[in-house]
Image 1 (cartoon, helix red, strand yellow):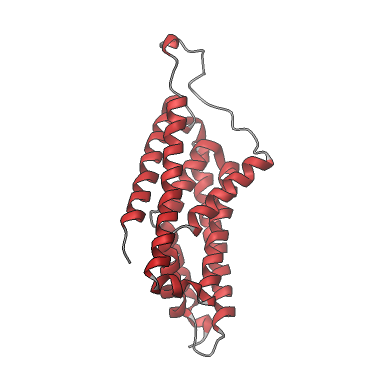
Image 2: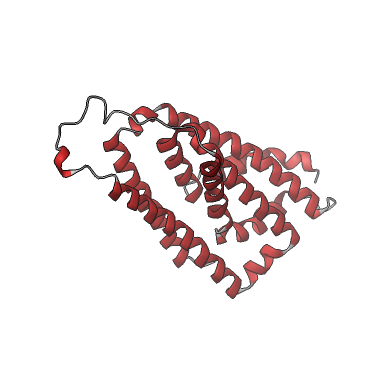
Length: 223
């Protein structure tokens, strides 16, 4: 079996996997809706770095340890659940802080509820969003198990395991980055509507609930 023969099937599988709901998708949609396309870029890059790292450690055999060891899987599961719960609670904290002042009533300044200016990300904000994406991906215990099951299906027996996995993972990263950035751009085009204060608060509440729900699911998940 030649590598070029399996590439079409690999790319189809990557697209389907990328489109499936999960922590990565929830995080990208939230960032793009609240911070615009530029705000989502570091999150996407962080997620893809995490994916590539998992692919490499899977090829090196570390992921096999996670898949085989109950203790290692439990530790990673707890860390992953903690990261998602933290992000969800943080969204709810922002929702609470952004509540309208009682004295404001319904007399808001014209246009004050219609949009919010998305500032250019500073270096610290960029790194924070990048780290947020990487942490969500690296703390996902299912990623370790998935990599072991996914990549070997597309690696010919005659090809070196580590180098071929690294190549396929790089291709997956490129495809997912394009798809996710395209999704973020589409969401950000409706950014004016998303960043209306009333809509923004609902989005924070919903995204917080989704992230907390995902965190609970990761905490309770089994192999």
